[in-house]
Image (cartoon, rainbow, N blue to C red; front, side, top):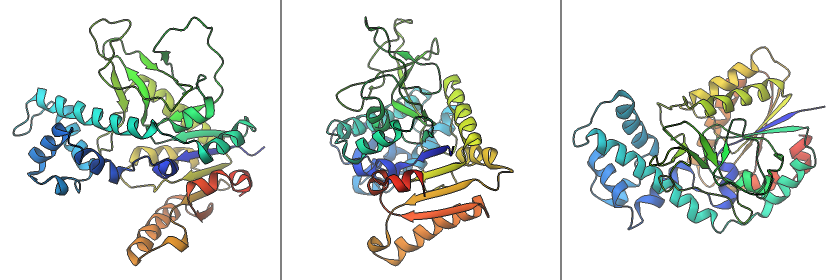
Length: 334
């Protein structure tokens, strides 16, 4: 039986109005309440006008902060405490932005997609590079998810836990994960009413009084820290799933050169496997290519895939994620 690994990028969540990386900064900076992030960007890049701040790539901001934090260095105008505060403030702003949008989530095509997957439980694995909890919610509806690592429920329940209904491997963390930096325990929470979000530094560890739980979000940075024990387990499970797969379907992922950890994971899993089928769903469709720049950008992504996967069975569909999710032929037989 064909086993498919679905790999989701930001384009998978676009139909639900989740912000892609290029939009997150604009969403945060333009909110009157986000004085902290505006101060950080102004100090780092000497930009004084909020509208101009929105043009700074999120990757640049986090790379600067992470490089200094990891090396235990300081930047002019930033003490160690200020660097950590700036980092945590940005993380909190990102989580809050996703929380606002997920509060009005409409399952729409995602529900049909989940029904298709759950009807074929032995034919697929799901890997996502996104933080949002849309796949968690539509697959489980509040029931446990097998995240590929050791997680504890954040809140004890008198009802015996159910068996996990689906496996979801989140390589870059999740909005419903919190970690204790003291004991190292990782906590999660599901929600039957909406995609769950847990705000950082809002709860203390149940086992370590006084230690506030932090978000587990691998930021868009060139110096990603994947050292968390549970994340290593997730990446290993993803490697095993990809090694078993006969078909890999990318949805809304541009295979950027900066994602070298993901590219290395893919390379390790495909070496020596010439017959592996690769399918790529990319937006926009031809009818919505509005200008030459958009066409060139799409062609650059296509060329990245062709270069990386070589002469393997590789095919592209230029369509939005919503139409793909509701097309059973594309899901299983393309």
